[in-house]
Image (cartoon, rainbow, N blue to C red; front, side, top):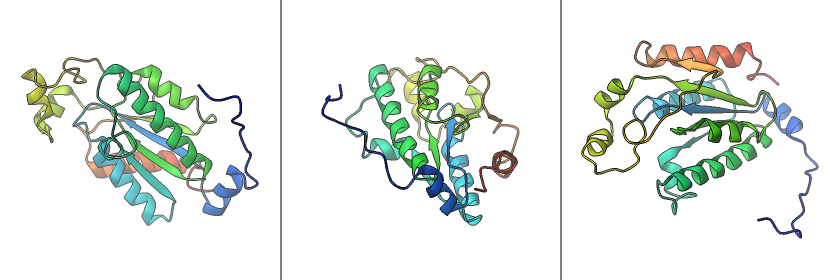
Length: 200
C-alpha cells in the first residue's frame, strides 16, 4: 500500500508538450500472443521501421525485462500478474514522456491487458493480437519450450497447461502464419499512420 505521506507531483512540462517536441502521438503498442507466435520478431521490425521514419520509440521485451526489473519474479499466476502490472506502469511512464512504446509479452489473460489499458488515456493503448495457431508455434519452437512443456518439465505453460485468452476486439489482428513479416509490419504502420500516431 502507498503511504499517505507520498504525494503525486505534477510536472511543469506536460505529456502533450513532450509529444509535440517529438512530432508524434504517444501510445503503447501491446503485442500479445502465444510463445513462438512472432511477437518479438514483429515488434522489433516495427520499431526498426519507426526508427527509420524518425519516430521516438522503445521496445520492452518479456525476457529482457525478466533479466532486470522483474528478475525476482517466477511464473506462478501471481507473479505473472505482477510482471504485467510492473510492465504496465513502466509503459505508462514512456507514454507520459511522449514515446511510442512497444511491448512483447504473452499476457495471456484479458483482465491484465485491460488493466494496462486502464492506466492510460483513451486511444493510447493499442492491442495487437499476433494470432498464430498453436501447431505453428510448436513447429517454430524457437526456445524448445513446447517440447519441455509437453514433457511436463515446465508447469503452467501458456497454450499447453495454462490457458490463453485471445483478444476479442483488438485494435489490430495480425496473422503471422498467412502473412510475411514485411506484410505484418506494413499492416501495423498503416494503422498508426491512418490514426495519426506518427504526427503530433
